[in-house]
Amino acid sequence: MRAIEIKEFGGPEVLQPCERPVPELKPGEVLIKVHAAGVNRPDVFQRTGNYPVPPGASDLPGLEVAGEIVAGELGDSGFKLGDLVCALVQGGGYAEYCAAPLAQCLPVPKGLSALEAAALPENYFTVWSNVFDRGQLSGEETLLVQGGSSGIGVTAIQIARALGHRVFATAGSAEKCRACEELGAERAINYKTEDFESVVKELTGGRGVDVILDMVGGDYLPREIKALADDGRLVFIAQLGGAKGQLDMGQVMRRRLTITGSTLRPRPVTFKAAIAANLRQHVWPLIEAGKIKPVIHQRFPLEQAAQAHAMMESSAHIGKIMLEL
Image 1 (cartoon, rainbow, N blue to C red):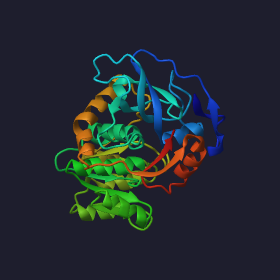
Image 2: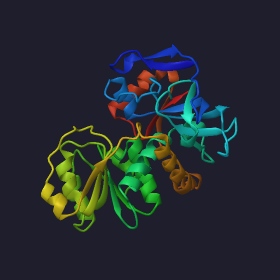
Image 3: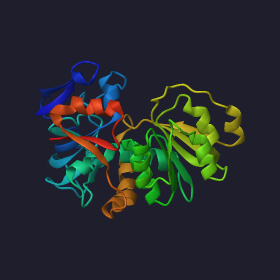
Image 4: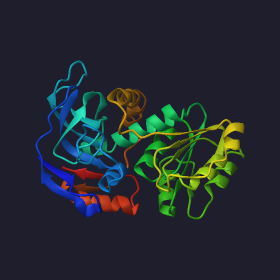
């Protein structure tokens, strides 16, 4: 099969077309003939040597795919051979065929193409797990999304807004801020010209926000602590601004704040299966009703994975970057 491999750690140019054997299935897996795959920041980190491949996972990049089930034991899953699905995988998505745990497969939502469906798994699993399970966003609580124009950001904005929450977001340009607001953010804050802490405090009558989803870290930490409401939760899913920051423990204790975070890739199938079930119950109906939509910035042929990674690293995109087969 055709695939894209990482020849050595380095820049986008180390992504090279290759021929690989079709994956052999492990128990509980199905084989997907890939129609499209998403490009994500963890793929970039893997390419540069900063995101180790979990034991037993494919060394090929790619954490989400959509396509046709062509082999595997389907049991009582409700799927059959030939069905179109999207799936979260531990690796191997940049290829013509990809093995995926059956429990991490979801039907392509009605009204979406395979390309659009391939844009869902990594971001939607991540957002549900961190905003709603770990961050416990509920009721009439408010959410601040750092990096609102990223794939994660546009997903978090849309899901939280569709479920009735007030959402604020940060982005780095006027164009990106407009995009966030068009997707449902009540107010998008240009982090280059505005102070997000002051803005969210003003918008919430001095209270602050209940949950912050953060991909930055670093010197954002003390400002985010101040931007949280009492009993607020700060959830880290990346550290693009650095792994260390100053923490006022007094505020954490006095205001009963929670600071947490997670990475999804190494978690077991049973954990991800529970997220898949929640997405199918709570989010897939919103997609099929047109209340949430994948936002795709640009698509590239599989062989142009290097160009797709260069675009990802430029941060010029709004939404998802995709590979088509």
